[in-house]
Picture 1 (spheres, one colour):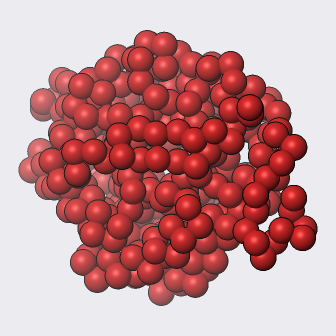
Picture 2 (cartoon, rainbow, N blue to C red; picture 1 turned 180 degrees about the horizontal axis):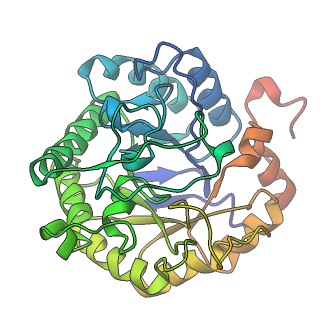
Picture 3 (tube, rainbow, N blue to C red; picture 1 turned 180 degrees about the vertical axis):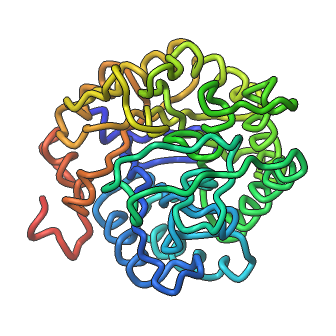
Length: 348
């Protein structure tokens, strides 16, 4: 039996298959109020119809100032909750589970009047990677503001649970705020959050776990390595992850980079190039992992699962290209699939 189509369960999260839709920002909140609109409704529901086991909605900010752009989703207000409820309820009609990626962009907040971060170290990016061609220098959060941010993560989690999400993912990768605190190259603080690089992440995890149901799993996305010169290697990431696991993380979603312009070490561009990172996390932590990164070929995704490198595979660009990637992948591997009855004449 094909591994990709087998069910998977962790705590109370029961998935119909091993396919995850990776979170991908849509930058489509036209009213700039953080509320999902018809674009998000069609975008996510179509992937549920398309056979995805778990959809993780895009990076959703805990504050207006913590968005990458003003076109991003947010969960900083109770007014957001019913709009997510409508979306979540529709997704679940197709036996798909749904999570949400909660985050703060930190120094990578492009539209903030004054970006904030773990420290005042600016981020280098290519001009074409930003809306305005450059990013403003950040201001270091005060110690009190750090503690307030922990509470903002907690409050956003409470709202996500009210909206009906099945799981929560914390974004601790790609140079955003949680990553900024755990990175020796980015965090130059002299208080306890600089002396202990895992402390901020640990406090955020404990805060969100305190309001999550005991049987709801917490996922954390993490960059296994950095690509800037002098950036950390996988040993540091695993050291951080061990602390995060003990604080309450149940699943690691293993990516890499995103913290700045690559130096001598460049990210690879071949299929499954990040899978060895996922395997290393799985072996070191004895924790379920989600692999991501150029897994759009169903055979590559199946091999990643069947070889035991990861428990789940996250598909990003492949699902932008094909909303029904899940159904098509299962058909390609197992030679049979059960699509929605409305599509049974075309996908079978």
